[in-house]
Amino acid sequence: MRIDGNFQAKYGELEARMRERADADGDVYVPNPEPEGQVDYVLICMEPSLGRWARSLDEARSKVKAGFREFSLVG
Image (cartoon, rainbow, N blue to C red; front, side, top):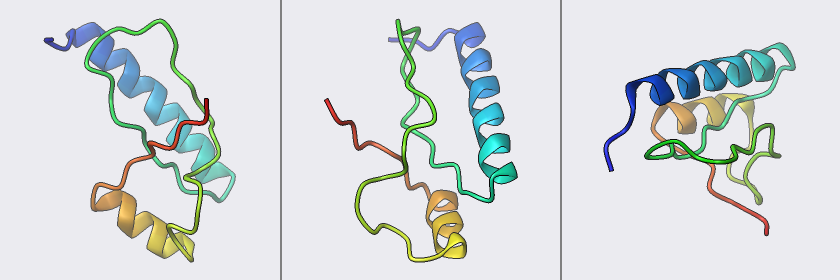
């Protein structure tokens, strides 16, 4: 499935707002894997990954920069 440019831009704007909010709160924004195309729902502001994936803000930022993504969905 090809990603629609408009969808990708809007999703990027949403991620930027969530990242700004996390920064303002002194937290680390952990991105989710990006959807491959338009979806009916996007869950935002979820609690960060379950478990102890990072012991400090610096470690969390380093892991996110290296590609760590949130994928713990509770159903």
